[in-house]
View (cartoon, rainbow, N blue to C red):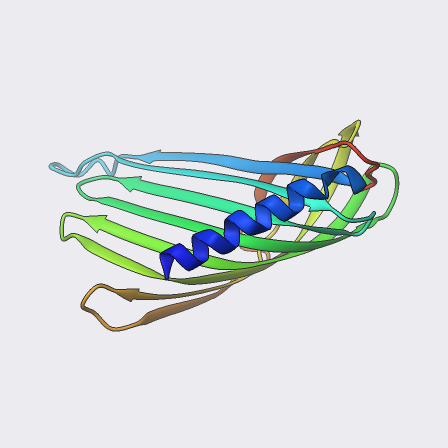
Length: 187
């Protein structure tokens, strides 16, 4: 299964790269770092890191398709890691030369692991979120999202399938940067 998913991802990236001269290449992402210490005697410091880069091909002023990668790591008295690789499709609409709104749908492969305990699981992840793009200069801009809809389904080694659903509109904000290279870009 992993070989099939990897093959599809490689073919997708190659296809986008082969047609890149028709439009522009979108590169975006965000990075997160959270540390905490509960102050309770014997409790370890907890550090959470998150890295989420993506690359896509913009077919026209409205449609973009590409791949999103997400890596999250929690390090405390245990280590919890999550990796996802998801193709995405984005529809953007320019409101003005500075502001655009967009909706993005992505779905793909999800891997989770935890140590100690040697928990490992593979599965499926899907996410939809609306966002705002602010064009700073020359298609370099800021992206703001205020929640979305998520679904995850994983099957641990030797365990039963687990799933989760999240609806988080207005419960948190996400901030990222993006840049379009080549072509012409309004959003």
